[in-house]
Image (cartoon, rainbow over all chains, first blue to last red; front, side):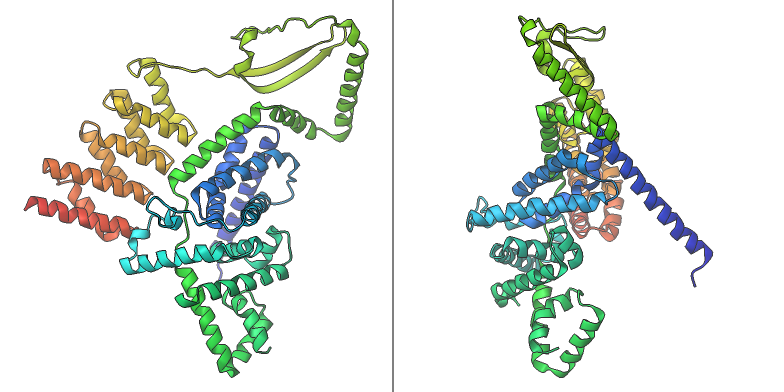
Length: 209
Length: 317
């Protein structure tokens, strides 16, 4: 049974969400008028998620840092054209997707780059792993590293579009419809890209399965 | 649904992306086809393997670096001609269309008039700056930062233009940390400046004077209250090298018990245990370590606390 108190809580939650959205719109309006501190605040609201997305997309701290900067400079330059009827987060994530997609496409066209190697000659795949790595036991950690290394190599074999859709689906957990919107394509095309990506990964990683 | 369809949709099934009716058809076919069940099991194993793969997480240090680099890039962007132009465009963009049209017409008219009267302007007049609050001379214009332009008034008679703007000047301070004024700027930066990258650099600069009372207080403040984990970690490293006292002890215990970041908590364990082993003092540290070894939400912190307890017990024996 949903009692009155629950309904009241739901109502308050909705109100606070609407309040936050209004505060964000006010911030955007100020940033559109050239208020740098408002823009900085806007950046702080989203930049951790943007950095996480770019890092997962390119799996290199250095490249993720470049992409992070490119995303926010693009947002800064085109914020004046943003219409407040749309959701800022959707617009921002579309910019992130476009920037990452262009980056992956350029990387692909520069041909198959060698995997980045660390000082010891090992692939540099684990440089940005989370703090809680040591919580795994040694066998798990070793297996996770091996999978990570193999996955990174396999991901490089995907087309930029396939990689993009796979990362957004598998790592970000987004729905394919949203992925289609972000990538400027249909849900059906996103489904096809995901299918092709998974097929290729299955081939490349078959011995791990 | 046949075997081919099932093959094509198995990843959608595993990612829960099938519509209810497709899912029902999928499961109906699966129930009657052993081959497809085997293939789905393989796909499920791949799904599990991919899920075992740790996802990269941005470290606080990376975030700090990114923010710092973006801040500098935005400064350059704002100071360049594009920034100025954008500032004007934003103002005009916010204006209603007729007003915008009027402004553009006036601008065109002004340029036309200026062009027509061009021969009358014989030579460039010297650049002058006025305003009672202006702290600089004309030669200093190169290092001012333009915040806001409130008026651009061309003068058709002289061919000149009057620009009214708010500007701030970039100043470079150089000096020793023995100079209390330099120290004060740095201390204020640690306590209140909003760029975490600069706060971290400032901590580094203050390291050599960490036992000065005002610097010491600022470092402990940063360890306790800075919003950025990378800065708190840097503060902790500096605090660790300070002359030990009850204030340091309390700040480190506070970080161990209450800091939200596991990296900071682990660094606090190291610092406290090192001191406790050296000085043979563990009355206050041991109970906290025992509590966290059992209850900290992060497995690595629990592990480190347990190792620290063993180290301290070994030291007692």
